[in-house]
Each structure stands twice: as structure tokens, then as C-alpha cells.
Length: 323
Image 1 (cartoon, one colour):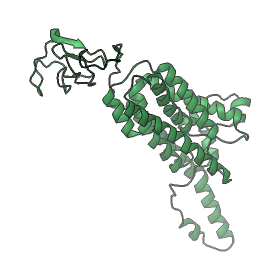
Image 2 (cartoon, one colour; image 1 turned 60 degrees about the vertical axis):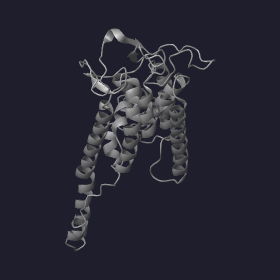
Image 3 (cartoon, rainbow, N blue to C red; image 1 turned 90 degrees about the horizontal axis):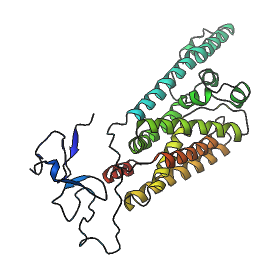
Image 4 (cartoon, rainbow, N blue to C red; image 1 turned 30 degrees about the vertical axis):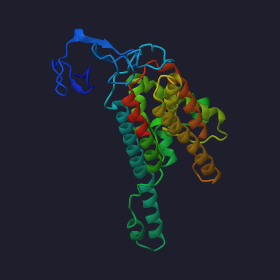
């Protein structure tokens, strides 16, 4: 529970039970408070010129001629610790460690022992093979292990009706690089969305976007490929930021708003172009543009629907700096 509040005179954080502000020395008498019509923060009735929180003019004499009285908005309480974001990252890392360990135990080690046995049959000792038994942490997890733990294919979902794979596949990753790329973006964007929408709405955005990305892959991908990764959900989180910006376009400070617009556009376009060139390379693995696009637009729609509250200007500045 948050036991602090901003001082209505100097805007510094102080204890909610304090009777006098330790920064400016003003007494905190609730009978002397009013709400700013622009940011809805509590301020002293004696303040007649500028709001100390949003710097909006409170006097008609200091306001521009064409400025209309703003309607008070609901201000989202700040969630300082991105609990759900960190929890999702921990789950993805834990699941990856399990898949990597299973690949080593069930696939790589048996292959190593078979190669050593083959060398012995040819007159060797088998020691040369076993001496190369070093764990390669950048090695891709075996496809069979990914599928056994919930990886998604067209046949498994559409034909065998194993719908749980739409969610299970969101927490699986093929390699350490695959995992790190998704988690680094989730750490920055997830913190932003978790603060803007709250914990439960953030969970909903993440899951809905991930499922939408999986459905888009099932219906638009050409081959019966094995799909896994949190990228669809991560793109949905980015899309939710855009939905929030569109919903509160006129209410947000232009500098932070434009910075976030630019960050979202750059992320989506740059990753889409990179994925297209990567897939043209013809490697064994490909980037799921279908999942990225489906997740992004699902997150955008969810952001438009769920962004009913407006955050404080200083919070938005922090989020813009993160992205």
C-alpha cells in the first residue's frame, strides 16, 4: 500500500500522515485544498496562478485567450515496481532453462555417446569425442523438446485441437539470443504498459496479444512450421502503448507524446524490415512476421479499449526515456 502523497504546495513526495511538509514547511490542512482542473491533483486554495504539478495557469488573467477550461481527468496511481513484467521475464527464463536442460539430457548427450561408440567401433578410444563435451549456451534448443513442452504447429492446433499450445508457446524460446531479444524489449515496454494500464489489464493485453499472434500464424503462415516465442505478446505490448497515445492524444504533453509515437513506429517498422530480410536468407529458422503483426494490432485494439485513465506527466516522461 502506498503511504506517501505529493505535497499540494511543492509537489514533493511526503508521508500521507504528515501534518507539515518537510520540504516547504507548509501545514497540510485538508480544508485548504482544491483540485487542479487540468491534472486533478490536490493543491492549496491559496494558489491562484500556476499549478505546481502540471504548470497550468489557474487564473483567467494568466490563461491564454483561446484556452478552454479543462475537464478534470482520472489520474492513474503510479505503480513503481513492474511486478508482472519481472514475473513474466522470470517465467520465460525458467522455462528456457528447462528446455535447454532437456535438450542436453535427452538429445545432445545421447548423440555424443553414440558418436563415441561409433569411434570405438572404428578402432578409436572414443575419448576424442567425449573430450569435446562442452555446453554451448548459444546452441538452439532441439525442436522435438520445444514441441513436447508446448510448441505450436498448424497440425497440432487446428487438426489435433491442442489449443493450450497457443498460450504455452508464449513462454518457449529456441535460443538464448531469441530469449534475450524478447525479454529486453519486454522489460522496457512492459514497465510502461504495466504503469499505464495496471497489473490485471497488462496481463490481459499480454495474453490476448500473444494468442492473436498465434492465431495469425496459424492462418497466414504458409508451412506447418514449429512456432514458439513471446514476440507476438511483446509486439502487442508495444501496440497497447500506441492505443493509449491515440486515446489520450489531446491530453498528453506534446513532447513526451511525440517521443513515444516515434519510438513505437521505429520499433515496429525496424523489426518488420529486419524480419523480412532475415527470412529471405533461407535459414533453418525464420522470424514470424505473422505473429508480430497479429500481436501488434491486437495490442493496439486492447490499448484503445482499456486506456480509460490518464497518467501523470512525470510518469510519461520516464516511460518515453525508457523506450
